[in-house]
Length: 277
Image 1 (tube, rainbow, N blue to C red):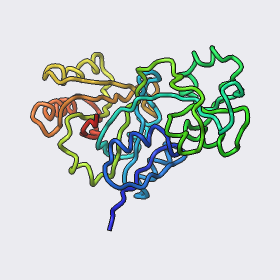
Image 2 (image 1 turned 30 degrees about the horizontal axis):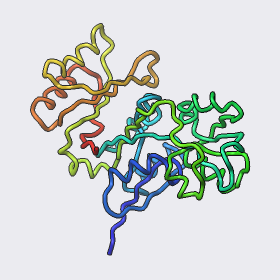
Image 3 (image 1 turned 90 degrees about the horizontal axis):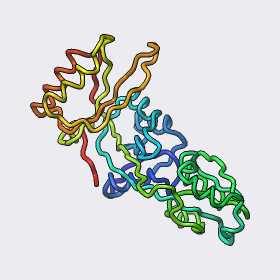
């Protein structure tokens, strides 16, 4: 009997999150599209799905702040990370040519990343939609005669569309970093990772952040990202999300976290994980 893993992601089939899921989860899986990021986190927390694929950062648009906040709200460990190259294509219903297109639907971030295309084709209006793949699904199902959508190429085959303009993004070095989240019971099984994400709150003292970062710098631990988010209920104070290379179970990173715990109000390890190329 085959065992299927239920892997959730935000959006519709063909979304870039689905590509990331296929990179990080091997074997048989049931892909579960969900309408929003809060719905995705709730589904994982309640056991309706086994894994969640979550975009966390894009090389052009920056961090997905909503998902940083949801990582703090839900204690769901990071198990893997991967990156997916984002290649935008203009996909139209069958029979619709590029010359016929007057509206292009897509997620606002995708539209923003195709500004040169819209400058070149001024007759085409950029229309925001909730999802890249969902926009292809909509224009093909409605058979709109003057509309197309911007999404990944797999959406064309999934929804029966036709690519009328390939690779229309402004920058080819466009990548999104994704996390694969699981249940708390899975954290120990994935404890051999080489990269760690944490969140902490500094004490409100001069030089507090400097001392926190020194816990890693003095031990030659490589920090790969730091991100601040507002601390709810305490105006003008912040949470800090930090990624570093290392495993908390190893001596040096473990000592750095002990040191950090001594000089902060709050520290939580969000996950120790492996990078999937």
